[in-house]
Length: 105
Image (cartoon, rainbow, N blue to C red; front, side, top):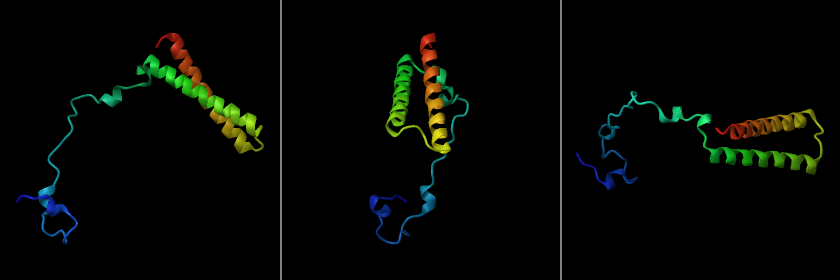
């Protein structure tokens, strides 16, 4: 049985086509090939990507510093924790990226 575009429109009650005829074709992934996405690691970043990452992280640190300057020091423990965690995250990531660039990775 062949179907045309009219069979799949919202007109009618949908009883004019058989759902069993529209099953997905048999497809199985080829597990013998290595997963390309699994091979991409952090060490595989190019110099350009590392520079972009460093500039972005320094920009984020700059925004954090601007926020501290504009709003003042945190008044509560939660705000202090938020600033500390963000500073450690962006600072640590920027430091690690800078080290990779210096080592020539």
